[in-house]
Structures are given as structure tokens and as C-alpha cells.
Image (cartoon, rainbow, N blue to C red; front, side, top):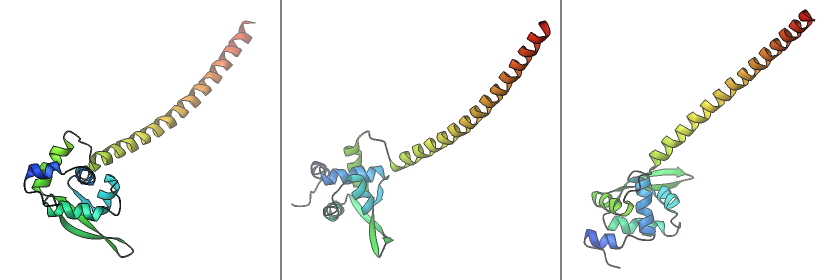
Length: 149
């Protein structure tokens, strides 16, 4: 397969693992590790290097770093090029969900869970106060009944 020469040529070849790579790069705001691309894009382990190499050769992504991921393994960090951003915009269209969005939502959920726990504790106290007031009211009613008898 020859290297596509124009934007339109590249865009025509963005399907399958290439499209999954673009969607993963979008999700991670245009910068992601090989591992993130593979996992988010659900790209098979045996295809990730071919896919990233191809997209790098086409000028869609570029390697910007390598990071250690434990036990001597290293992962490449890729970034969308200007061409990559244009391709991404065309492929992803109106999808807006990114890793930052997921993180923001996760933080909002956590804050809401804390609020719920606080409200549950407050409700427990209110129920306890209600029961105590109910007991006092019963005592007053019994006292008044005895007084009127």
C-alpha cells in the first residue's frame, strides 16, 4: 500500500484500526501513549505498532516521548499533527467526550456521593430528633389524659 499523498487520500483510508486510533487520540485530547490508544481504541496488541507506524509515516501523528511503564517496558507517546487534528475533526465530527470530560464527571459523581452521605447522616439525625419529639408528645398526651380523668 503506497503512502497517501493528499488529505483526501488519507481521509479515504481512515477506517478500521486507523479510525480507532484517531478516536482514541481525540479522547485523550490529541496526545496519548501506545497503551492508551490500544486500550481505548480496542486495537489488537499485534496491530498497534503497524497502525501507529503507518499513521506516523502519513504525518497524522508524531512520536513526542517514550515513558517507562514498569518492568523495563517503555511506551511511545504520540501527538496529533496539524494534519492529524484536521483528520480527527473530519472523522470524529461532533463527538465531544474526552478523557478530561470523563475525569470531570467522575469528580462530580464523587462530590455528589459525598453530599448524599452527608444528607443521609443528617436525615438519620432528623429521624432520631423526630422520634424523641414523638416520645415527648406521647408523654404530654398521657399526662393530659390523666389530668382530665
